[in-house]
Length: 274
Image (tube, rainbow, N blue to C red):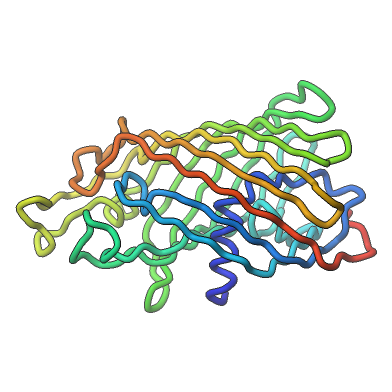
């Protein structure tokens, strides 16, 4: 995966929850275009510093029966039933330089993180023909891409998602709430302070596994023309009950993210997705 692809995955992960994937019937097998947007998020979960990025990059959506690259990420759909779907997905997040984060000054940078693993989606109920409530159960291995590849633990993020879409797919809306749990390794990555990095203001700290955050959010999109879609999202996180609430690197009780963007399709296939 190239650096641009990683950036594109990260931007899709940050912004494209607003561009909900519609049912694949009557949609092209593939679309090629330009994706752009601006997102402002905490530098890492619980950071008091923020990271704001603006990117414009090419994108490819591929709606294969097994291999897929769409608004949900890059992955492979293994099982699809009326109420249950199992896939393997890839997502990514952008790095954070410790020089830009006051709490981590003098500590190693946080690299680009790739998340890979299975996700089960269970449809709970369909209140109307254009809405549904589902349960997502993803388990992901976290891999850091910085001077090579190395594993940084696992995360588990069960969440409930409510989706709505317009009759002609001209608008979409979703709201979700969930919890993120991490093993000791990923919590150490974000919140541990080794003795050699301890200072009077940042005492040594040994991180533990457990709850990282509780997250809720909403996103929406609007089809302006057949080729142009605008979207945005808001997200709120609480770290009040986090397992590592006493870490000197966890500076906030809450964190908020916001982003807006666009997706402009330049070319699409005549063949439809199955």
